[in-house]
Amino acid sequence: MVLLFTTSFIILHNRSSFYCGEELVLWVKPKQKCGALVQTLLNCCICRHLLELLRRTALHGESNSVLLVGPRGAGKTMLLKSVLKELLKEKDVNKTLMQVHLNGLLQTDDKIALKEITRQLHLENVVGDKVFGSFAENLAFLLEALKKGDRSSSRPVLFLLDEFDLFVHHKNQTLLYNLFDVSQSAQAPIAVVGLTCRLDVLELLEKRVKSRFSHRQIHLLSGATFPDYVQRVQSKLWLPEQFPDQRFAHEWNNSVKALCEDKSVEDALQRHFNSSKDFRSLHVLLMLCLSRVTVAKPCIKPADVLEASRVCFADAKANMLHGLSILELCLIIAMKHLNDVYEGEPFNLQMVHNEFKKFLQRKSSTIYHFEPAVVMKAFEHLQQLELIRPLDSPGARTQREFQLMRLLLDTSQIMEALQKYPQCPTDVKQWAMSAFA
Image 1 (spheres, rainbow, N blue to C red):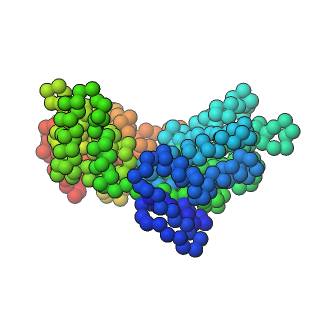
Image 2 (image 1 turned 180 degrees about the vertical axis):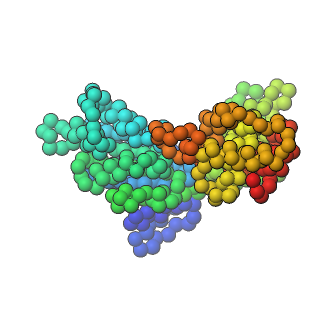
Image 3 (image 1 turned 45 degrees about the vertical axis):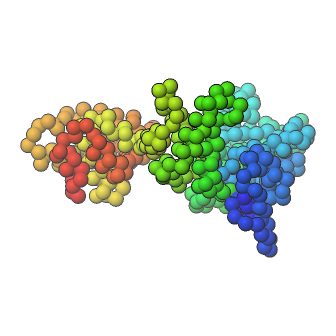
């Protein structure tokens, strides 16, 4: 494993070691255990960079911001946890440093995030029923409340933003703007650490937000190779020598070895490896395989791996289309045609209904004729299933027929679902495949 350190980047990769100018590269044996590897990293100057960054905030009140960037499973969270564990060993830090953990999957808007910040800082009683004019005013009040008795200094706060790229989609990026603004203006000693798997995350930031970020990034790249991946599969399934039933363990281990050497299994594992090098997704695959083991079939067969792989790669939204009514399916096809004609522009129920009427006008049969209220109900059901989503906020005062929507399916998903839809009428399939509505 290789660590590359520059003035603005730390890059973790699995290549050879060298030193060049201001860049420092360290080679570490890739087969070391993960925990031991992180401890090794902590002892080198590269990971000391992150440790020193957070220490300056905790001890000297110096505000900082940094992003940990890398694919899932590369070790971003483990690296940060290990650095924090090392940092909190210092008595002065452990007494004063406060941590706020936010996750973009949980704190889906700034209002929820602010409540979570208040809760983790234990300031619910201080805030009480106070009304604030803006997010910035509320955040400033929280940080002011953390000041010590002499009112001259404030307790340092470490903000950890997991799934950082999801916070970018909050309205006006208010949370990120205010956190970066505080860290830059030295209003209070805070450190903002973001974790993301998107390499282009800085391009998603608004100009005013980007200008307040320190542009300090730490990049971690997965160094796993496919032979390592297959070896991990074998080691996870391997039974130890201490297993009570020695005969079964011997037969099981032989079957695991044969399984990993099977060409079809190797192809399935290669697909998973190319899709994600995160070992957590591999564990899901192996759990599905193990769930198929029974007394009558006491070992994993290649067919079990292939079936588990199919389940892992199953498209949940495409599968959801199989349970739709014919009317709902027709509305989805009408939306597909609108997307094709208007190149992905948003649509409303009235436009979709008009598109559906064009299809009905070409059919003499009355089986597809529905009352407007029924069409409205079907449209709302598609929204509940999250196959479409409104462009405006739920509170926007717009008639339901004219509320702009976006389709959350692509053409390939729709066409695949049509092929598998039970007893789908031929004319509906032909309408979906036609180049015109």
